[in-house]
Length: 296
Figure 1: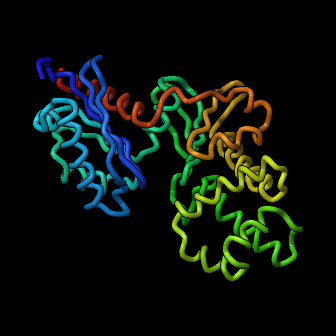
Figure 2: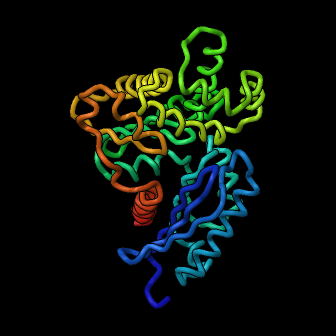
Figure 3: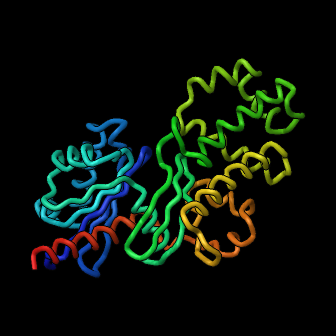
């Protein structure tokens, strides 16, 4: 590399499916690479291996050396960062001299809103609701499939299986959703057996069926999505949402909640300004400025 690397920054956005890393020098080109899952709580060693592989691949693509990466201010937004202890453990396992490690929510929020104030309701395999106002961020949710992740894709999948069993019990009337799931799994016993072995991603894989049938006016499917939207509305209002404040729905199923929100919220829905990796890069730049201020 012929250009100076003094303004080099490095960022990563990683979760249970994939991790993307990026490096940028000043206002120059951004180089990106993608590797496997980096949920540090699920498999710490595997996450470290993927991150190291990503750094090596990014070095080859960008032309910057690993030694330059080690010196660059770096921001990592990774699933499974549940507190300072695991963040410090990861920092010690990686070669960076200056690194800031957080969970994956701040990067998603900054990526979706840029520097603007607003709310994000993120509903992928997991879920969280977030608010950005000035330099402050606030988050609700993101606690995983056992204790939370309401309105997420896996939550929708679980609810759909429950609705199928309610039909078997005679609590609800017939529906295409119930018939489809009971046929897929071979009756109620099959539904229970399958659910006992499903991962969050496998539950989430049922969400497209629910959204498809909701468009066909299937009552249980509509009811599930309305319940999810009601949760998002309640959380945003508890966090202080006010009329006219922008809302961004992100994640695989997030945008599907748009027609189930009240009209005043529908009217302020906006498209994401960027993705979580662009948010991680913005936070890496902010971290770089923090370091420069401390050294001045």
